[in-house]
Each structure stands twice: as structure tokens, then as C-alpha cells.
Amino acid sequence: MLKRVFRSGFLVRSGHTVLTWLITLVLFLHDTDLRRCEEKGDLVEPVVFSLLVLLSVLLYLTVSLMDPGFILSDTVQGPLGGLPLGGLPLGEQEAMLPQTIGPRMRRCGYCLLLQPMRARHCAACQRCVRKFDHHCPWIANCVGEQNHRWFLLYLLVQLGALSWAFLLALSGLSWSPAGWSPWLRTHGVLLVCAGLTGLFSAVVLVLLGCHLYLASTNTTTWEFMSRPRISYLRSWGDGEENPFDRGLVCNLWDFFCVFRAVAWDRVYQRARRDHA
Image (cartoon, rainbow, N blue to C red):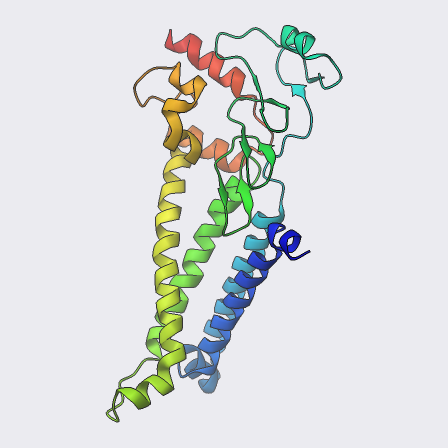
């Protein structure tokens, strides 16, 4: 029972949400800029900060709970027009796959489904994911074609909330001439909050920078880290050229504004013809 609850991500999501609101509560209860604004009757900063924290939690739960692009059935996307192949013998399925000038579709060795190009099986989720980026233990979910943009937006909002919380925690740390022991008793909890928010801010900043770069080049974490082991990239050439890269503006437009599933094999074929 406990193993099932932990695997479902309930504990991770609950822990993240509780820790977020605990730190927010500490910042309101201690002598920080938030508390001083409340005492002066200026509620703009406390309200805006609370709304930013709420937005970060909502985005976290959205990214954590939404479908990242799980492959649910054997469906060929391409000239066959979405033909389901699950009921056919393996030999007939392979024979009916469209002929391409790139690597053929492969069958997952775990769930036995046909994987579209850029898909990968996630051992943690035990599912195949379209345009697989990585499995994130922080959100207890995969990051893939359907939730990658929301993951990046969550990182942006989370960085804003954490950085602001770090500055608020620092605003409540004032030195007392009574000595270290009384100072730690008074400011210990706030000091821990400053340490946590500062550390998490640095981690989120690095993640945000990495994923902005990946989005701008139309690549994924898995492709960036494992290029020599990926057939469609290995057959493209030994260089760092990416067959899916359409330029900075087009890449960012596709990443943030295209919400449909993309037939990456067709994109690959066009890039192959243009590259030849």
C-alpha cells in the first residue's frame, strides 16, 4: 500500500506543496519586509507574493499530474493516416510500416508498442512518452511533448517565487549584540528558509537555462545527453547538427505555440532531403 502511494507521486507532491506553504508562512510570521508591509497597512507586496506562490503551486500540480504524451496504442502516423496495428501479427505490422529515408519505427522492448520518432520508454512511469525529455523526480512525472512547455513556464514562475522568498528571508536577518546563541534561537528558522530558498533558486536557475537552450535548438535532454546511442541522430552524422532545428524563432514558436502532436518522422525526412 505504502509502496503504491509513493510510486504514484502523492508523497512527493504533498511534500513539495507543504514545504512551499510552510516557508511562505515563516516569511509572514517573522520580522521580514512582508510583515513590515502588513503592519504599515500596505498589502500590495504581501498579496502579490502570495499570488505568485499560489501560481507556482498550481503550475507544479499541473505539470506533475498532466499526461506528458504517453503512447496508448500502436498507431502509425504518416502515409497510412493513423492506422492502428495492434491486432496484426508482428510480421504484418512491420510490412505495413511506411517506407522512409530515415530509421524505421522501432517496437519498445518493454511495453511492445511502436515508438514514433523521438519517443522513449520511461522505466519509472513504465510507459512510452512522445518526444521524451526526461523523468523528473521533483514532479514525479515525465517531461514530454505535451507538458514540456508547461514545465519550463513552471520553472520560470518558481524561480521568481524562490528568488523573492530568498530576499524576504534575508530582510528578516538582523544581527543582535547579545551573541550567537540568542540570535540563532530568534532567527534559526528564518536562516534555514534563506538557505533552502537560495539553494533551490540556484538549482532552478540552472534548469531554466538548460531548458531554454533545449527549446531554442529543438532538442531534448535525452537527445542531448545520448546522441551517440540514438539511431536517428547517429545516422545523421558525427557532428552536433540537429535535423529538427528550424532556427531560433521557429523553434521557440513551435515549442510554446504548437499544441498538437508532431509527426517527427516527416520533419526528419524533409530535413534529410534538404540536407542531401
